Amino acid sequence: MRKVITISREFGAGGGEIGNKVAKALNYEYYDKELILKTARESNVDVESLLKWDEKVPMNFGFSQSLFDFYNKPLSEKLFDAQQQIIKIVAEKGNCVIVGRNANTILKEYDHALHVFVHADPYWRLKRMANKMPDAAEAKVSEQIRTIDKMRRKYCTYYTHTEFGVADYYDISFNTSKLGIDVCVEIICSLAKQ
Image (tube, rainbow, N blue to C red; front, side, top):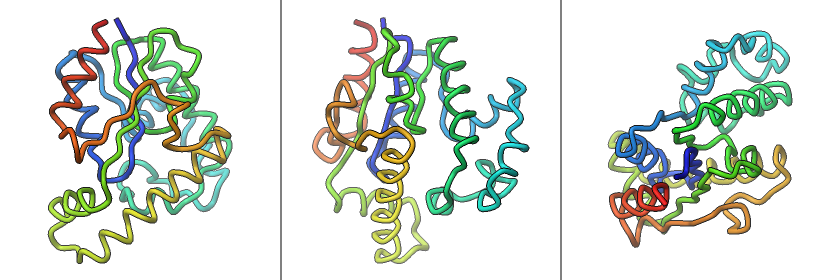
């Protein structure tokens, strides 16, 4: 049985929603950016001091900062190192789903991990995110999707020396615009139980 599932995703493809549903279905813990930073604090990793190393990262990083702003701010090497440490702590406990944070690369040596990449057609992502942000103009949503995807690619390349979304770094890839969220959840749960 896979005890750790990592989910990397294009913005708007539904990776977070899939991760949350998989965690509930398997009765696993669910970790994303906010919960990883919360776990860092609970594990006595001095996140506040780490954040001070990089003036471009605000002190409220990860809790009240919007997702859009997050990808426009560079992380310090120290913060990435702390995130790696926390992801490994979480993975050692097992029975968890970790969304984002390049966990697939950080945990590439873990035998009981399933590394998933979630993507979707651009128009499908645009419609999905426009529904989630009804007050935002469609052009603004489209711009944010492109910006966040670009920043995720840069972040991945810079910190892990791998390529975001390239099949070599994942066990399986899902196109949610073709399969739908719930089918992806079912398949991931089935694979995790093998």
